[in-house]
Image (cartoon, rainbow, N blue to C red; front, side, top):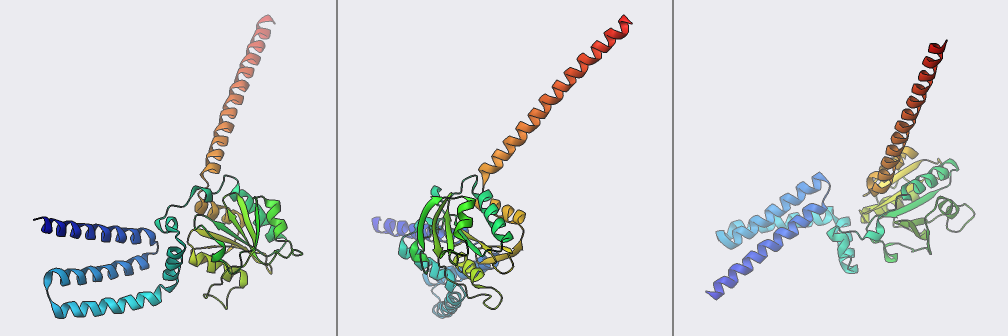
Length: 299
């Protein structure tokens, strides 16, 4: 009896762990086509397991195992970039990135978006090439780059970003890494993407390369030739964009709720002040009307 109870408990834990792993995979996949492929693959694996354990059909089991093996090889080729990133995160022990729990220190402050937009706009007007990587929880480390650059550890500001991308400085050609409201390093050399080599320049390929490997980071690109703004996120590049569009995208991706709350409170303050001023104006008008009535009665 105890043996069968142990077997049932083991079976229950097996099913629970498999279900939890499947839910974790589904929660991490954002693209619809990838989600369909993952569902089909997990359905094949579940069918093979069920037939081997309960149905006792040797020939059918062999056929499904062959199909699962072929699908595994196909998905390994199709998802080689994602699998490489998964192995890198497992090797470096960054489980919080895999589980989707970014540390609080990577969350941007209320003024981060405005400073990034201002710096990007001024760099675009002056046609200075720039590459700004904003870490939103990927926990980027020096080993994730081809060259980790020069350690800065300074407070984020518009003037400092503009000075770091000055054409007469040695840090001009590299990227700047921003975490929260701090500039971590400058002169960082990013890995290049293999997509769109003929269409994009080096800065745009670097932005695509880092956002392909880490989905919780974004990259702002300023073209040195044309001064156009671009934003890379999850291996996709949106270009060209205006400063207002860049601000909208950054607020959406960074989740700048403090600035929105501040703007709402400022709106409420202005509306309340307008109400007070209107009430004061009405009281003044009433007193003026009363004085006019008294003068007419005296006359």
